[in-house]
Length: 414
Image (tube, rainbow, N blue to C red; front, side, top):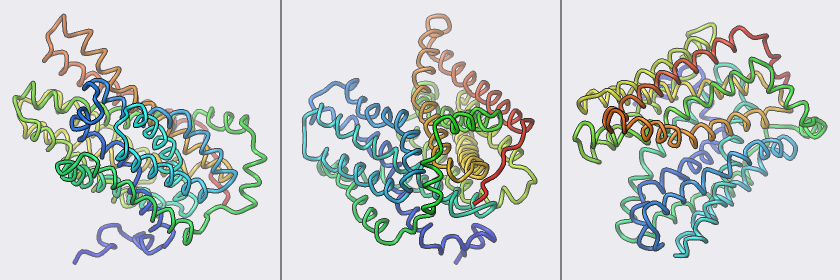
């Protein structure tokens, strides 16, 4: 049997920490906000009596609130503690999801998805922040990677389970959201708050000006912007891989799904190795540059692919870069942020990531629509994908170099 030490290295002991185990348990829920709904959209058109275009609002209603709320929730977590915010997030997320099974009113369903989006804002950024509170150095990078790997596992398994349940009745997949309720109970009973009363009092005394001054520092700002680029590129990949496989290569929707699986496998595997990757280098600049190159080159290969095997190779590169980059970016952000501001700054980074994910389909769609009359649909899709890969690669590299050459930020004292 392969041991944890073999998989994770010398920091593998973190998986025996009860607080970390509870954070991983809570982390299974947030990816279900999109992953469980996305494969069901076509099935839900009939029950809610809406068009294929309108049903997509179920995704928008979930993602939109967090853009505004995540920074506010981060400030709240710094002041009242991580535990209360996570419990509230889990309850909102679960109630909003399960309740959809009991309505066929589309407006009500949208309101419930908004409630889930509010819950999401109190989960992922707070879980990331709590890991930063608990660990330092390589252990923190390993912990962030393992957390991200659990998200990948969720993306690989629950959509398939949801699709199986939907074949029985459309309502059944929504009951999977009830898993958040026992998780909230366990967090309430056993999770040890990683911040002290003194730290939270210090956070209450910290005003918005302190936060704005901190995130405006060149090193902090460049890292936060750079952290949003992988979200943009991965969402672009999720949006356009099916166009490449089905319409450009002549494959099937099932074969397009293989690209998502390949990317998920590689992003899960690479995320678990974040601690080891960090230990190999004096600076996280180099692995982040490599991850940025892997994502950009992989997405370009997908866009140019003339066969499924080539597209699969590209998707593996996308997943490898995505798992490594987000794990390390989150570790960097939690590492250089003072404890009284950590929740707020991590949440700001998460909000920028959500912005990147939200605008990617819009920007890509505008580019394809603008170039299609001139060069045709196939060439428009391929050129847009390659252009996005190139621009994101350049932008990500520029952010990393600015961060490298900017004045250092004092690490947390706690």
